[in-house]
Length: 177
Ligand code: GDP
Ligand code: MG
Image (tube, rainbow, N blue to C red; front, side):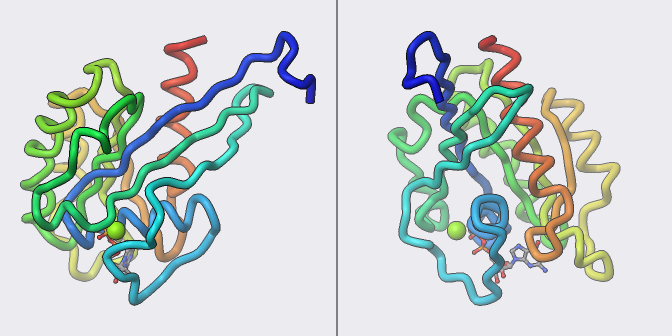
């Protein structure tokens, strides 16, 4: 703690987007509080959660925004995206329709955010291998096409959750430092 004298402060706004029920809220609660909710309602009632992350000895505040379920009505507002420097675009590997929506979410992101925003394609629910509808290869290929980072995650068993957020935070950090 240096009271801010000569210290750098980093606050990065990161948005979670993707179709309803892909696991956005649970990815955030897993990352920020190490919690998972099986019967999670559409909303956890907060706009964002701030998580402090240490990157190369620098304290970075990641302000991660979650939708309040408005994605069901395709009504995510521009205020949600305003000032975002990173995004996790989430689909559910067990529901192909959510993967098909990714391009639409990317277009929306491009209209509202700086095109230099750090973007990660996230295939969530990788614990449900037995009912998988989207292969890892398809996820990788789309990410390559769209120049996104890519990971499969599970908010349920914690696979890659921290890693996915950290890659985005690191990328933002390296672009501003
Ligand atoms: P959101 O609408 O995108 O915020 O999705 P939620 O986080 O509310 O999750 C929707 C449903 O999927 C809930 O029933 C969660 O318990 C479930 N869910 C979320 N993430 C995972 C996961 O990684 N694995 C499994 N098996 N279920 C998950
Ligand atoms: Mg939600």
